[in-house]
Image (cartoon, rainbow, N blue to C red; front, top):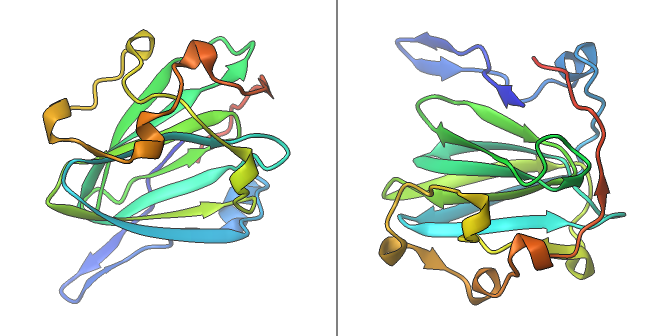
Length: 180
């Protein structure tokens, strides 16, 4: 779900609500976020595609406060009509767009600017034993990361993820229809 907050600009700068629980509830989104994460990365850093297996699966509300990324959400809900399809969206400090990524989606991003500060809320605590991942360049996923692979900086962990067909996950499909 793409969330575009109302931004108030004036000669002093800007103001916007990056999260409002009442707005979420009014739109049928009943998430209780329990953990905030903040990362800083330089151009070409690719993080992903990550997920947490049940019962530690996480819904994430992601945004960029400095710089620009290409953000990817990959549907891994078994039985979904969009199974193994992805959404690619640019998140930046300029557009202030946010992405709500429900449980059952793998997530990743690549830094398109000189550097980036990336923030996200999670509705479940991180659990190392529940870590899962899918190889970022699995050709069956047809993800265009928008920068040359030679420019990418990728952790050994992310390079060792399996292709989607060999990844282990068990997320049932649940229809997700609300927008705000």
